[in-house]
Length: 151
Image (cartoon, rainbow, N blue to C red; front, side, top):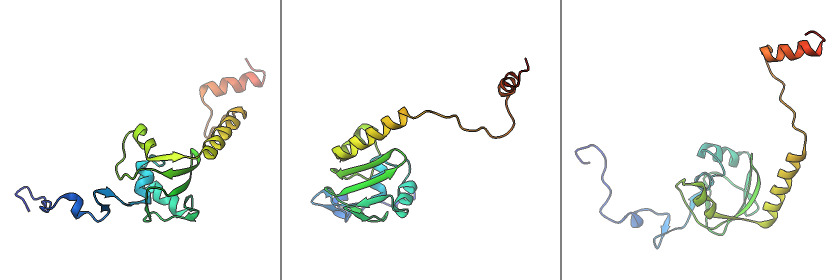
């Protein structure tokens, strides 16, 4: 340990020390880390939870959070934004800007068309305001009075 109390890295290069690198190229990443880095989920714990609930499929099989994904794998991701069918192009453990995150995968045409179609259907549906809980506001009381015929 150094004087500051932190451990020092071994003298070998980091790529030689880390087992998930082959010839200087990352060979596999945990499923939850990749989903988080690709910005499908806000936190790694949400990504892990989605795996537990069966909302993530890898190459047609249910995926666990600790499973390693590799470039070329096909994932089906179901989240609040919709259903995505993607092919992994690049591996990453670090979360970056959205523009870079979109370069980590390629979404299939069928998946993109289906999501756009569902988004159009949602826009066409009438929007209903959620029922408010608790006592009415001053504005609500005035509207209720007008509806009952009171001025």
